[in-house]
Image (cartoon, rainbow, N blue to C red; front, side):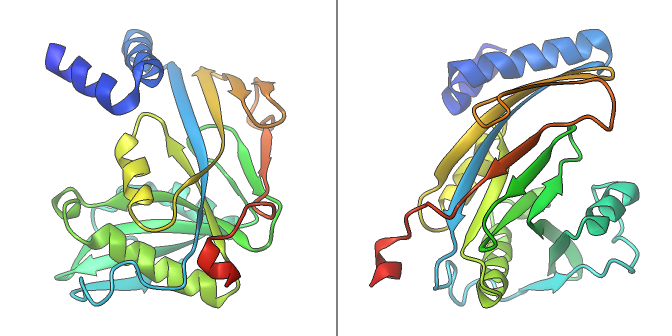
Length: 238
């Protein structure tokens, strides 16, 4: 137990670690009625060159067909996938040796979060959201994430997208490290703390509207992020 506490503290910092353990205690004590989420919002420039080169070519990257059945063992509910497609999101899937090795989701403009009640919007047409990056446990030490990201980068740049934004859980420091290792430095855009209890939801954010109280599914905060004023990497100016 002490080892787990030390590891969590080292990975998350004391504030996020305290929230993480509080979230676990409340969820367990309330039977899941109480939930706490803390998010970091970051932007990353989509570079011109591959982040992986010729490596990992045994990993095939394919778009997910909205009309096709989900692969066996797909770790998201069919209703969640359908709702994402309905709002214009699309997914890239990584396949290795005939098995699903991972996926990520992309959407331009805005997306409605399916973990909490919130809508995250982008003001610039040259940016998009990437979200719900999942890698099969046995592939997490390999090149699957890098291959997925590289394929997404190439497709997005081809269509004029220069920035990708992410909502990353503060309780998942590995995701932040994975993104940071794939190119230009992550640029912080803000953060949010969201507390849920039954139908109630409280949001405290560094981004307007700063505070929001919700009691029904039709009530949710809208957080807008603008990458238009962000500085491009030096090489892009040259």
